[in-house]
Amino acid sequence: MIKGLLLALLIGLSVPDSGYAEQVWPIDTWTPAFDYDGTSDSVDYEPLNVAQKHWRICASYPHLKDSYWLSVNYGMVAHARRLGVHLQVLEAGGYPNLERQIAHIRACSENADALIVGAVSFDGLTPTIREIAKNIPVVAAVNDINSEGITAKTGVSWVAMGSAIGNYYSNLHPKGSKSTKVAWFPGPEGAGWVKFIEEGFRTSMERSSADVVAVKWGDTGFEAQLLLLEEVLEAHPDIEYIIGSAVTADAAVSLLRAKGLSKRVTILADYFTHGTFRAIKRGKVLAAPTDSPVMQGKLAIDQAVRALEGTLSVVHAGPAIKIVDQARLHSINLDASLAPAWFKPTFEVK
Image (cartoon, rainbow, N blue to C red; front, side):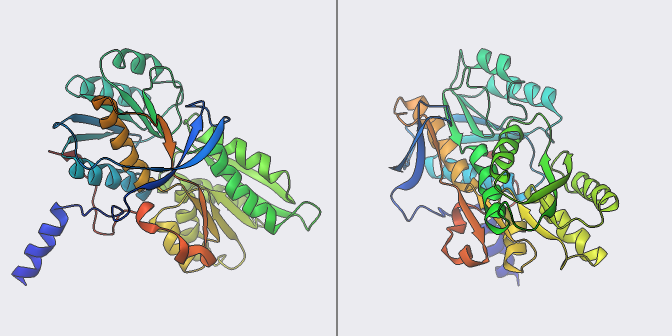
């Protein structure tokens, strides 16, 4: 028993190099950089094996309330340990907390060699980032952001993420087919990724028979989404589809089961987490696109170190977006998308 506990502790203290069997990572790049409307190319990216020195990197997240950002965290922690750099992680506690994130990155960047920021707002951080970028490299991670002051960007087009799930629905219910009633949960209004996912979703849904009868904006916390779902089901008891964030999907699975509506209402998520993986596997969620958040975490660390060492050549990169449903579950590289089950939020790598 004692040996088993010691082994578990040792496993918990180390992060294996999951995903490092491959010598290169398949990624997308954009030209011009920082412009998702530009030309994208697929390339093989060679990650660093070790840093030239023990760099100090500060990373700020919007939150760690769901397993999506936990997977980003895992990717950063794994690659920071692989390269031998110090990583400090801060989280703002949610998308409404712009001032808290500004305070975090101001304080953290004073003792850091580079800053990685997953922004709570597309424009709200810009004056602060311009100031910080005068002294250290700034890498934007995952959430899109105004590119003023940014040294590099790791991410995917959230317009494409919205389009991916909208196209999936539209292929099932093309224009001219029987109308279906849809409730749409874009996420927190004003967040850097939400307006883009809304744009992609709305454009792709124009090819469908959807009757979008409800739109509910809100923070991607479980309780917040649960309340919004309850409001929609009360106002529209005949709803046929719920489409929204992975947290929306998680909450919808629980609420529909409690109300006995699981077989009548179909759920689609616009990004992929542990919860959506389990729900897709069990047939509770139909599909979701993955943007490989573990890989994005690793890429952000790699870009930060390359910026410090003068070897940064790929300044805008991200994994290819892939749709996950039951038919595709076994062909997806889950190690690039999901942190291991044992991984817990980690705020410092020394």
